[in-house]
Image: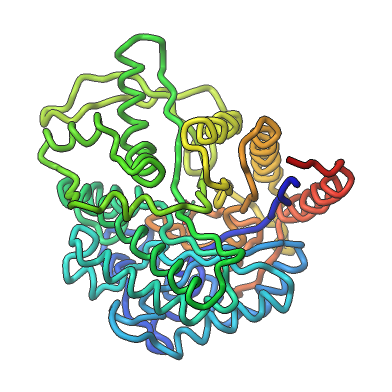
Length: 459
Ligand code: FCB
């Protein structure tokens, strides 16, 4: 029988919780990064954010009003296991206990992401993700988290977007911890993936030992962006293939085929940035993945450019004449259909979930705080349509999460970019569902009705 689709919304700990020094939480790399002048727009921080830590029950009630089946949130590692070591912090864990209970009481499935970028600063001080030991620390943290919540949570995502952690965190320095060291960045790629594999093993073993394997879904979320060659010329095709290698294949291949893409691995080696693979690592990384989360925002057209002075392959992004969001990202829903079909064709096996999809626009609230965001509604509608089209054509798509439930702390952009379907007034912390939230709530109901009416499919 065809699986039911799940409809949800997503957030992450540092972007919404606030309460950064409460109940034993220690600083994460994002606290340190935000405190460093010149890193985040207007010097903003996640100190208060959406104050979700103190407003959680009302926030969950709002999710229920919108009719969400599932809520994807992340645990703050420095809240659960301060400084990234030891048995776990009961006061910090208690928050997630209450959140999970509140969700279950409202019939909303809790979907946990273990790592959405808030590494304990103590672990960065010990070398961060370029240090292999961090992968083992991550597996220990996964054990603490699973022991605390595994009796009620079956959906576990290890990492959110390791590309961002490695590239933006350690290579471009746009994100915490703000390092600019390519060699360290590619070591981070490998250790993030190794951490995923080790943590998946821990969760599966614990679930098995506790008789909770049924319904368990373990996976990882990647940001995948199709790279479309600007022309049929061999140079443009090669440039797009390289970009696809760096952004997509470098993660998909080890996870789902137990090998790094040979072209990318060889080039990195040549450039002095080898992937520090040890014997046995790839079989750990390629643990069975129940769920591959896809975060999709945009696609890029890529044209060849002369290699940089240091030998790095270069390319240019060709601007298309299409709508853009406030992030300057091109709105290309059709590329989502193509992406899901490609995943099904080239990497069959996991269930695909769109774990993030959404858009920032320059919202203008009326006197009541209502935002008539027809642009965001259109973005959601066309992307949901595109995802369902891929499903109709055979992609094993099982669910969709809007990013984000709330306006929140958008990393280096601070509060200057709003992705929420619910507006947050940061002066009063008032929440007001936008037009897009109403649309999404209606769409969920419509899709459920359609599902009920469609003939049961077997086989
Ligand atoms: C993704 C992140 C998420 C949010 C959106 C806009 O890369 O996972 O936290 O910042 O982009």
